[in-house]
Length: 50
Length: 383
Image (cartoon, rainbow over all chains, first blue to last red; front, side):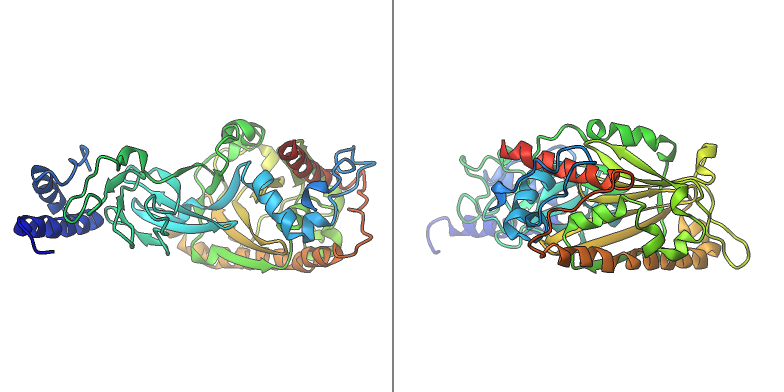
């Protein structure tokens, strides 16, 4: 998929994969990855303590 | 065929009653009817809490074709969920494992927390966009199945509308309240399975009566005679047998298992063996307990899952390991003695002229009580 904004699309795509795997293994990086995706309007904030 | 079996003869008093008709043991259609009307509508045993001891431990279970998973969450609570992703229906967990963080569906990677909450829906709004206004996560958590742990057995109510476990089984909980104390599983050597070619109900029926003991278990009968037993009968809940001459197992050096704490004198030489309807068989004794979970696999196949528990953790009593092994061997031998009986009754029910059987009013009360309970559940579902 090559189109305007593709850099942003690619960023969100890879952030998403990193976020999913961080969630799966309970890595602390999930917090920052979640925050970045939320800031980009691509994810919902994690609940407290999650 | 299933809906037309005559249950009236089952629901008369034991002196005049007949047992459940043959179809209840040999018909696949009846197996499905009983799954829905009996096993799914009451509190059925599906597993053991000891199998998911730590937070994050998960164990999938196929219960009568229903994919379930037991999970211990971060707070230590044990939950049972339908093991099916809310997206495309993929099985989530295919083998027992430790979940470090989230349960990730292997198909499109929807992620669930250990408490079942839907946590992530990657690319659900398009590539790199993980939210969508029509994907409401708070409505798409894993389907939680009502569950309750008693004497380490995990019970579930699939239909979701049975009264609370503690209400349904208040009588037995009170009866065995002295035994309401920690049960420590004896370890790998205290666990075994017996696959038997029989309908699950015949294993229940054989367990709840003492009538067969002198003929099938002569070794047991050498010190625990038929007349030393009494019936246990609680209409609509459970039935079984008790003995007045329970004898502790003794090792070569005279060692015995430590007793459960604070038991009354009744348990010095008393022990009770109860079928908790529908599918769990329990024993309460002064120095060890066991649970047998009957897994109904098909109309004529059942797996008996046997787990033995003690008053002390095995790691605190390594010197009793040989005695635990001896105990497992003893019980295994006794339970194996019952296999030809439950398999023989299964074969016998292909006799087209068998009429459900004539009960002994003196000896078969506990067995009839179970038949009556099953028939009542079926009648209730048939309306």
